[in-house]
Image 1: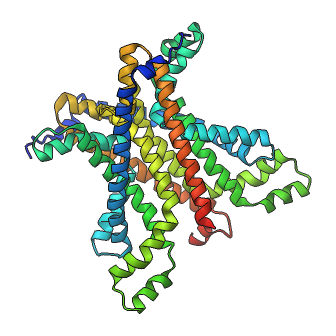
Image 2: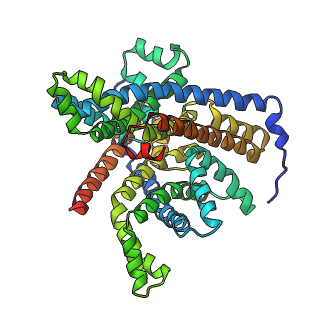
Image 3: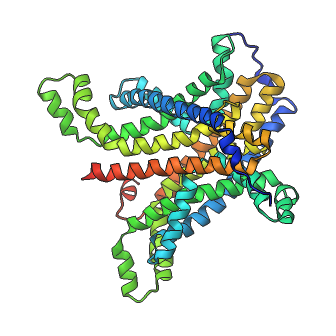
Length: 240
Length: 218
């Protein structure tokens, strides 16, 4: 193997700054996308477990649609196709005039995609709480929204913390797809360093370490949260 | 709003079909390679082989913390460097898929093996089978039967993941469609078509998995 090592490159101007800026974009993308995925996913999870056939139908169609098209293709649909289907004015705004068009499109697209996955986790959490709790809530005179608000969701969220953590980490990793529409996030930055300096080894190692560190930190943090919020009488509480 | 003209699809059917064949080839080879390597990783951890079990665990957790695109870039850069000569995008991308997917497959397979009751292993050993024989003849067949639906679901995920070869320009279905789209100025039609094809294939496959799951359960 013929290769000139130069680890110093990672700490030299401008490359050190590039990596930090890339991480900044990656984190911003992930957090904004997560806000959409979590709120919409929860709403859809409620839809899929509600007593209304119409709401259940909407939830099912959404999940099947967004889960069965590759995220990359969805990204292209939002970025290249969606503005063309709008009236001229609005299309131009989405393509060019809205703030950070590529970045905004990317976090919305990733958020909408992940909402379908969050929905399935929330649904399984609500189902795990059980019919008994739901019936008990209704029996003491709560309306269905009240049952969700005070009985099902508080329990379900505590059950699904581990799968929701991995969904967040999936978003964190999937944010790298934004580079295909020109968002220069962490992976794109290190790729750029490789192309400028031919020090691919050092550049990709930097990205690898950053991704792993963030992932393992989030996992450790969430393990603490999980222990603190464990439902009494469940397996995760017994472990703690 | 532009006028849509879907005849561009028929006119380029050959090119698109070539792309789809590449996508399917990558999917199949990725599944086979991923399951083989994934089984080895899972076995090392279950048999508690000293040192190697820890290495396997590290491998799985490490790869699961990385974006697939980064892994694709890594191998696109590394494979030619290690071999000392340029190779096509196909081989480096395939290595990336196998290494990456193996981490996910190994977790599925490990859970599957762990779901086989320990009495099965004990019984096999008691009638004189070696550890390897008991695994191969008794435990693994039951484990694979139990995890078939999850393995297939992961295969659908892999099918969708192959679209990421876009970043190194390998001519899969998506890249072929993009080439046509840019050449004939038919971006909207081509991307809608691509989305529809992926949707129909993934949806049909996941319906198939659901039917299979119901049959295995009874």
